[in-house]
Length: 289
Image 1 (cartoon, one colour):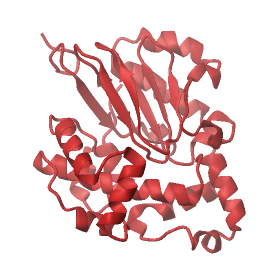
Image 2 (image 1 turned 180 degrees about the vertical axis):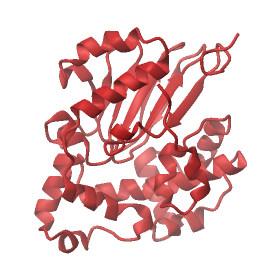
Image 3 (image 1 turned 90 degrees about the horizontal axis):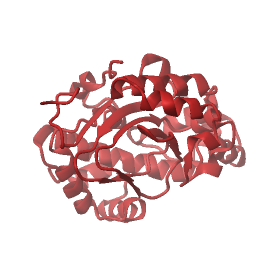
Image 4 (image 1 turned 90 degrees about the vertical axis):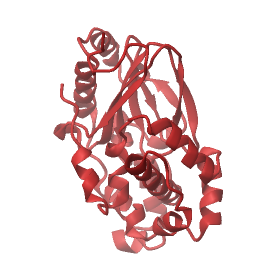
């Protein structure tokens, strides 16, 4: 007997893909996670955005922008559908300053009263894919227009750009103070903190790409740290401890153990590679409804 996704009952599975085209401006990826016979402690790492997720049968929740890693338990037999929002989208989605939701995990109905009905709709969906499609539709309907200036700031802070925050005010024709205010309102954190998070995501992208290629992370810490903008490997180590509470070597081992079993995270890490590994681009396909 197999599940709808081809998996074996009792085992866990994870499918991550690009969002539907209507949601692409607001979300970087979507996912379905099905947990087996034992509960799973899911680690969430700062990525600059926020997440709308739902354990089917429960109310959807919003995990705000993180400044350090956190864990959430998924019950045995649980199925989760989720949408990862791009940095800068959250403020327009919730209609309030995103900085008020930093490091917060809140019930979605506290922000969107109409989610009460969606809870029943998602729980009664025929398949997790249908539930995910309905969640994507809700986010697309609720999202406001992103702040174009903040969106440009985010693009310039991506690791492959090789720059930092110092040049942003002149580049965007705005004062440093105003840029910081608008960034906190849209993203949740200021440009400097966002830059640190995106730079670390660039490192994680290299880890995940290595796992996908070789089944275990090949250790190239010195090259990866320089490539994404760290001064040296010691700089990477300090930031790794600050953001996830582990050394780079421990992160390599953890991703190797967690993702070498076939989990596909390409939708998340390929954009952070800056288009340098085009061969992974073909993996970024939507999950059909």
